[in-house]
Amino acid sequence: MHKPFLLAVLCLLNLGFGHCQNNIWRVELALNDRLNLPFFLEQFTNSDSLPSFRILNGKEKINLSSKQKKDSLQLNFLEMDGFLMISQDSLAKLRGYWQNNIKGQRIPLHGVSGDFPRFLSSSDSKPMRVAKKYKVTFSQGDDPWPAVGVFDQKGDILNGTFLTETGDFRFLSGNVYNDELFLSCFDGSHAFVFSAKINGNQLRGKFYSGSNYRTDWIGVQDENAQLKSPNKLTYIIDSTLDLSDVKVTTSCGFKKKLGAFNSPLTIIQIMGSWCPNCLDETNYYKALYEKYKSQGLKITSIAFEYGATKRIQRKKLKRFADKAEIPYTVYLGGAANKKTASVLFPMLNEISSFPTSLFLNEKGDVVFIHTGFNGPGTGIYFEEYKKETEDIIENLLK
Image (cartoon, rainbow, N blue to C red; front, side):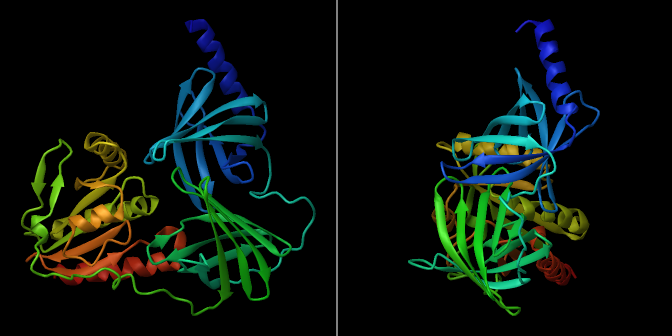
């Protein structure tokens, strides 16, 4: 492309996005022929020549970096492996796609600028009340699994999440119209849509994840709903096996054993760069590391990654570690599945969740194991988790 023409395209593109009357775009991902996932894309200005964008899921704001691609903008996720490609159809409309490199998918999207709700309603409605807490069961048939639903409703706007024994569904946002609720989350990895009918103290609906997964769910109002303790789901089954003998791969491709643990406290985080719950936990661990490293805290992350070869897996992990600015050591454990992780840690009953964290004392003994991660989207539950974790750390560092 000739330089004068490229400059003209840049000017037109910036004029289009920059002169939009509203800086919020309501975007829909076409997950399949029958299902769209709505989310908000906020446009804002900074010192760069290109417009900047961030995804909004309730209170969550996910910043994206902008890059010019001919007559389009490529909006890159800072940690997740993928991007949005967008261009304008008109002053108030955009189109494009989400490139999900984790799953090798390209999903179409379209959007419109203006003051719209997340989920649209065809008529005026009188929203029914959604309780604050529900005992929830997903997949009523063959393989049910429990959860706790927590919600905050203001008029027809609904925010909330589901806590499970392996982590939370992060920041869900949507609407209530008459006796129906709708929620969604899009963060560059998760693409979730929930719907339900409200019937007295019950919710009964559908959960969709990505283009293909669908299951039923039912919720019963219960202020005392709770899950099994995440501190008891993973445990030692063979104390004769030593964690120091666990073999990992460095960023340069060398295999090594973890070796001796000489610090008063070492946290081994079992995670994956593709996992938003792991990213939430990593952000928290970075803060913990800065707070307690002078007292002897060490953190080691062992990641299980997607990719056909170890080289691709290492490349994805390095990209994540660099962009997330992780200040402690990160190793590759293997391919991204729980079976591979369980084989690497034969002293444990299983790895049932990414992330899972092991807390070791200076002798290398496992003194505490936490399965899953209920992050900032869970509100008070996240605050309770932080207090519990920091109490454990301070006791071990005495």
